[in-house]
Image 1 (tube, rainbow, N blue to C red):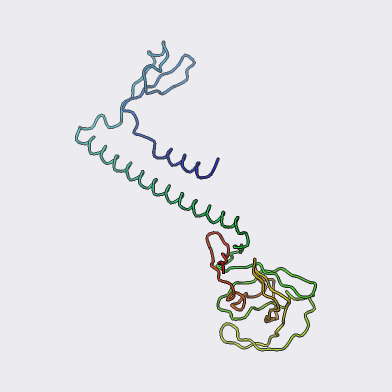
Image 2 (cartoon, rainbow, N blue to C red; image 1 turned 90 degrees about the vertical axis):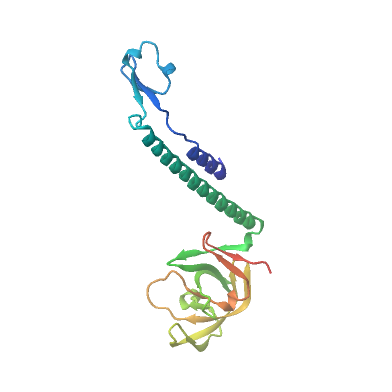
Length: 238
């Protein structure tokens, strides 16, 4: 069953209920089983002797008091229906947006790139190529970083030539020694930059959730938006 149809059925099930009848009946059949019905015609012949009648809980109250309680109940029911309708409309609108996003991705699969959200950090899958080697890793999307930086362990085994010494300023203003390297390409989703310069950072300690920073020297070339709800990068057409 389609999701939207299930939501619609659920919604109408919520708002379709009406007030209970004013009178109902309890009887015991010949096997000793107890039944409750709201219509005398539903009671089998021979069971009338075991019949008990129950009336609505407000029948003992004065008419004015019953009217006041009924009005309060009607107001509560209308409010419940309003909230249910608003909730239904909200769900249907969310489903519409979800479907549109899904169809957009189907028409142009390269227009979105899934990411991992961890500790409020956007971790992006990245491919790095050099010579005949290609590695895939996760970089932290950092719009505050002007240059993409890779942990040294990422390029281990790639045998990158021509590393040059450099210095880099990190968060807090500290200057550290580092190296500059040129890889054959770096690719995120459908976008790739060839002959890409990157900073190589020495990394010590236990494994982290990412292996460097994806900076504006890459991101600045490709208009994009971050869809936190669906956890994808949406690349704008150029």
